[in-house]
Amino acid sequence: MNMSMNTSLPTIRPTPLPYTTPASDAQVIRRNTYTLMIRGNHMGDCHLFDGDVIVIRRYQHDNQAETIVAEINHQALALKQLSISRAGVRLWLDDAKHSEVFLHNRDIQVLGMFMGIEHHPMTH
Image (cartoon, rainbow, N blue to C red):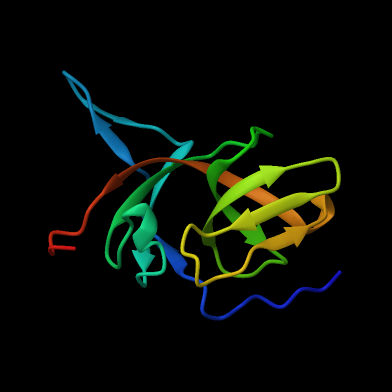
């Protein structure tokens, strides 16, 4: 199945270095955790805005209604809400301007689960 991505969906740009957390004696690098920078304001309903940095933990699980980062047909990353059923996977943005996307399991790979956010210093 070939699916064309809606070009108005927000894309997220990976930062080059892995996410680090300070420890008492030294820096600890968590290789399963990384940061992404939000481009665009399409996730405003989730309080995610242009320039915000989100923390993603590499994780693949079938929980219902998780916030995830997904790759669809090798297209750019998009932050989505995920719901899995027997029929397939439903992805949607909290922004009501964008319609939901339904895919069969063979057409989607979940890359990680949303863990946190650092807002851009500008006022939103």
